[in-house]
Image 1: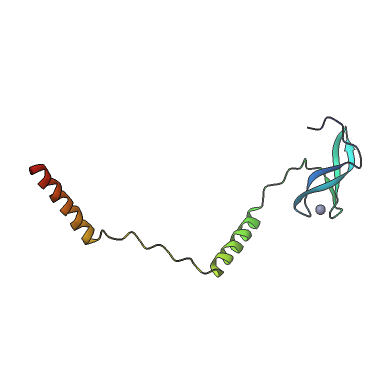
Image 2: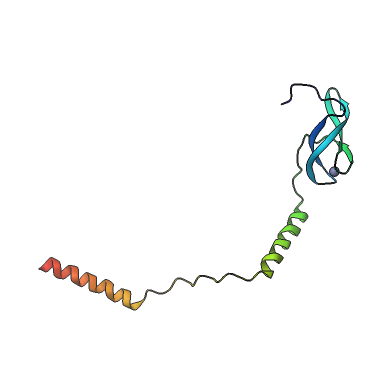
Length: 109
Ligand SMILES: [Zn+2]
């Protein structure tokens, strides 16, 4: 993307494994014109440049997050559930038959 070579001290976005966030980093090491190492400007943790790639989340953490979500949901009052599909009311059925009878009567007449 950038058409100028990175330099030491440049501020670039990268993923900090300690903060577990995409944050501003100082370029602290270069290798063949490419950023090799960076230092997180938030926690000052130096690590290899990760090309701003956020690693896939670990399954265990995902489960923790899900269980937390479930806990939150469980602690909340449940919304009233919609009633199950009601059986066809007898009155409506009768009305339908009455309608059929009325149409038949019209056809006859
Ligand atoms: Zn950090």
